[in-house]
Image 1 (cartoon, rainbow over the protein chains, first blue to last red):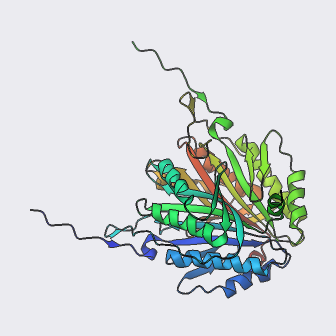
Image 2: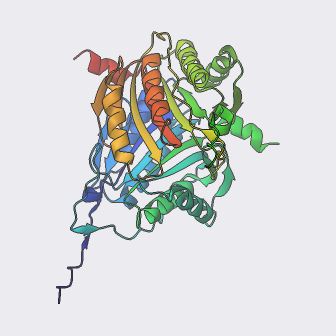
Length: 209
Length: 209
C-alpha cells in the first residue's frame, strides 16, 4: 500500500509572485507633485512598493495590492487640476521569477480572494485584457471570465483585443482582480492588463449625447 | 495515392487581426491639443484608425501599424511643453475576433516582417511584456524572445513581470515588434504590452548619476 501523499500547503503571495506593476499619468503640467503626492498619501501597509521612472511595482497579498492601486489612482485624480488621469495596470500571479515560473512542488494554488473594495467615487472607462498562460484552453478561460465579469457592477463591452469596462474605479478593479484571481485557482500563471481612464473630456462629450 | 494538399496561402493582416491598441499621455494641462494634434499630423496611410476615450485602435500591415504608433508618440513628445509623455501600447496578432480566434483552415501564418524604422531621435525607457497564448511552451518562447531582443540596439534589463528596454523610441518599438512578429510565425495568437516613458524627470535624475 503506497503512502497517502501529504496535503500540499497553499502557496504564499511571495511564492506565487503576486503583485502589480502600474503607472499613473496625470494630464497636468504639475504631474510630478500629483504622482509623488498620491504615492506618499496612499498607505502601502505591509506591501513591497518600488517606483522607478517607468512604473511602480507592488507585491504582497492580492487584496492589499489591488486596494493600494485603487487608492493611488483615486488620490491622483483628486489632486489633478484638469481632472484627467490615466492609469495603466498589470496584475500578475504564478510567475515569481523574471522568466522562470517555478513555484516548487510542495505548494498548491490558493483559492481566490474576495475583493471587497469600497466605492472610490470615481467613474472610469477601461480597456481590459486577460492572459492565462500555458495550456491550450486559454480562449475558453477568457470567455468564461468575460461572462463572469458581467455579474459585477460594471458595464461590459467588446472591442478589438480588449473588453471595455465602465463603472466606479473600485468596482472595475475589483471585478478584474476577482476574475484574475479566480482563473489563478487552476491556471498557475495569469496576467491581466488594464488601461483606466478617469475624467476624459472625450468621455464627457459622449456622456452628454 | 492521395492527392497532395494544396499549398496554403498566407493569412492577410485582416485575417490575422493584426493591429495595435495604444494611448498617449502627455503630462501637460494642454493634453487635448497635444493628443489631437499628434493624431492629426501622423499619416495613417491605408491603416484603419479608430480613437475612443480610452485608447486608439489601429489595424493593417504590421510594419505600418508600428511606424504609425512611433510617429504619433514622437509628434506628441515634440508638442508637449513639459517634455514628459507616456505611451501604452498593445500589439496583437492571430486573434481577429473579440474572443474567438478562428483564422480559417485555408491560410497559414506568414513570415515575420522586417521592421526597419528610422531613428525617432527620442530616447525612451520602457517596460515590456510578451504573451504567446495557447500551448505549453510559453516560457521557452518568452526566454528566446528576450535573448533575441538583446541583439537589437536597445539596453535590456530584467524586472518583476516585465523586461526593461532603453533606447531610441523607434529602436525599442522595432525590436519589440520584430520578436512579436517572429513568435507569430509559429504561435498564432501573440500579444505584447509596452509602457514607454519619454522625458521623465526621474530618468533625467538617474541619467546624471
